[in-house]
Length: 310
Image (cartoon, rainbow, N blue to C red; front, top):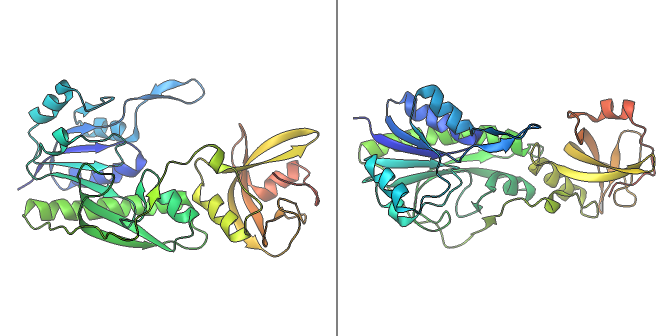
């Protein structure tokens, strides 16, 4: 028997899971997602990817700014859902919401809990140089990603994988795992176990200044920083060119040989010295411009050895 579900999610990452649940034949009573936000050059309000997907499926959409009011709590109760499925929603669910569905609220989280609880687990895993991550299905409680875990899927992180690439892999893995979890929940076979008390880390949101590259760090750390923030928000640096500072987003790099002053361009192939070792820039983006291969950038911009990024 199919379940009556409320789905709660916002970004692209959440869409495959919604699609999988619809494909399984479950009844989606409503979708909750973040309200439309100003975006683009015209700053026109744009619906979230989940909002747009729900409308394509003909599903009722709610976009409350908060779930704390009595009105919102009653509206949620009136849906009479068997369970709530949450994937990167972006709002805290109060106990008065979590306790409503008879079968609970279940979250698809993009890490191997308790490592990387919080908002940016994909980026933080790569920035830290982790070689493995995954997705987990967790029975939600009022803590920050602290609930007991029902199912997990492990995913390897290759040495040059970017956050964008890992995002796509984990989005598909989350959809598959959640579909299996909801199937088990439907049959009364979804068991959980508490998270370990050891190994807890937190994936804080990425701050704007944090995205700036620190060339004094070892090349491996800089490489992890770059790929962990690619394509968004993009690790950035500045270079003085024709007497003016230009900000550059570095979207891809590879470890290379060489040494010099941290941030120094040490050859004609856009190899940059770090505090230890060096790396070569492979893909770059100037403010207001499209991303491009470093070779293409160099054909239109003269970057000589001895120039320093900072």
